[in-house]
Image (cartoon, rainbow, N blue to C red; front, side):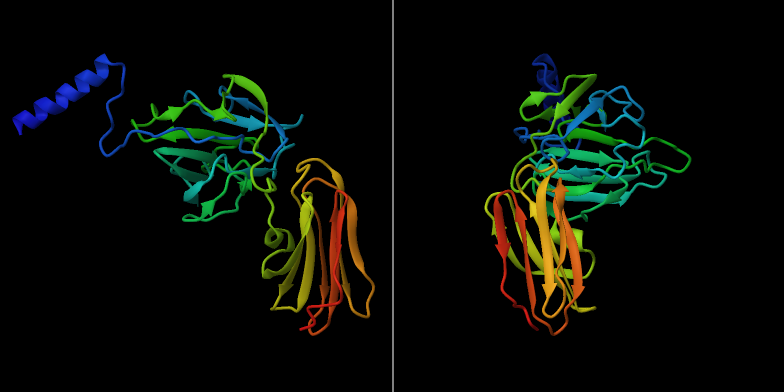
Length: 298
């Protein structure tokens, strides 16, 4: 036992002399840093501040955009990198985080997204980079009144809190502490934070879809509990920028219902009762369009 203690002390001393950090009990050294991106949809510009309201430790960041306190309330928050959700819960009186999502990215790296108005993912879920995980909010512990913002942290497992909070790096560039405005390059995959099920609502399941070139995809969904169909066109190009997008649904024998305009993320939802009746559906994004025949008649 004495020899083991001397060896442990020697390792700690060598780490200290080498400028390293002795590991906290039960911790493991962090692996290579994931290619983190800004936790907001592709193309959006957000101002981060490490000295603002709830950022009390070095390298934490509070994010906002817009000219008023509530300008970004409800804006989409997306995963900075792919990983597994290990916390999705309201923290109650435990701390000031309110609605918190924590994502484990593997290799000893994790990210924290706090004060969310709503959480869009559950613990145990695997999320892809750019997937919507919640919305900007101002939830906190009781009695802690804060303005809406996203509190963002990157942590590792190679030492204990708060020394394990790391500088944020987005798209390979270290955030310009204490304040910087950054444009999101979180553009992997479809880079659209919305899903067709989220747009159409609870109870709807995708039963068909069609690609609109590289500009997006139009989806047909059905709700078995009420007999309604729903159509939405989800953009995959110019996401976050208002461009011409259309979704429509036509129940055989009835007038077509269309949602068409300049939208940043999706067109629709358009819904209609269609139990036991054929439907024609389609949409447009960019220069690509899709028009179905009358089908899905069950």
